[in-house]
Image (tube, rainbow, N blue to C red):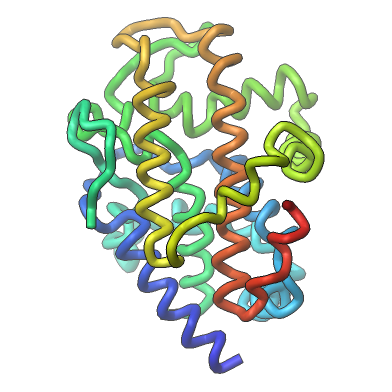
Length: 272
């Protein structure tokens, strides 16, 4: 376990620096993926952990959670405004110069695990690598179907909640099963292996940020104006992207944890 502890500390430090701390500013009121998005990311990852990683994760979590990582994946959002953790607020975001559409930036063990798990979700939300002047879409006010919202919140939660309501009877377990089905026997089956491609884990977050800003430009911002009403056309075309990013975050979190805890060949292979 001692070797695993050292690796987790190194990778958690790396997560703070690389996943969001490079050039981020605080975006008021934004919480990353919604709780549903973070929970599904962590559940997908946990289902792909090898035995050593699964044991280590269970050991680091409070006993009453019975090893359920998803139960605490939103913890970094809950504590980001506490005095002790105020310094972490800016780590949830990476701002990109307006219209650049590219990305070029070169404690406690349980807390390290939770931050790493949470930030892996955040960096896969395209508007978390959004433009500086609109605070990742937070200042672009609009209507989502019949109620007020903003572009960032649409990507954080509105699309997920609408999908749950329209297609999954508000049952998150059904939605997660659908996402995982597309990993093992569905539309993403041929792509899953490529999601793990990067020269080494230190280079991975840059790759994920590049993906996110490209998606933000191509699908997030495109065609959206202040005061617009976004409805079926936007929802139907963007929902698959949101679900894919949740899936990618889960796959990649499993890859990180399996690497950290010595199960690099476990878990991921079952999804490819």
